[in-house]
Image (cartoon, rainbow, N blue to C red):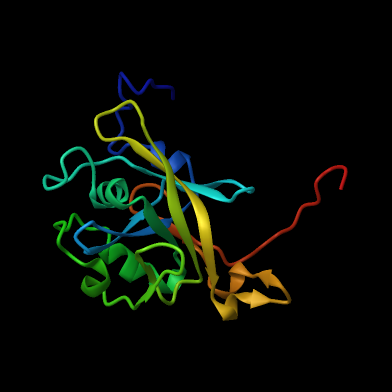
Length: 201
């Protein structure tokens, strides 16, 4: 089949998210100007540069108590910092609990029973037991076409790696099995690796 987004797909559910998969999940922790912690997952997330290391995530919805966006973007606008917490398979239920449309004064760490730790280079909390945490300072927020589409870019200023995820000097993802977002309500976990040598190496 072929369809244009303007005309619609005629399917029971939008296939777009199922086409662009798997997607890593950025579990974004922020702190509002009022000191309130927030934690929410975003599957429009990725690394975008090595030197200096930079990441991005996109927010594509609104909340009635946040105007044109959601808690994460609103907090980052106010404070200029955030932390990306990497999601492992074992944390799938806690991550899912934090994805709800909770009111802005809800602390998702408390809501989902998630242990928090202090970041070292930015003023917000991080998921204490995550396989890795990327502390970030905001570089820019880009408004995309659409009412609520914002892309947040940040420079990584601090990196936490859980000790059991380091093996022989390598960050070994098989030790924690990353959780990835698929389409619809579907997720996947990484359990096997393969290596390919680039031509010319």
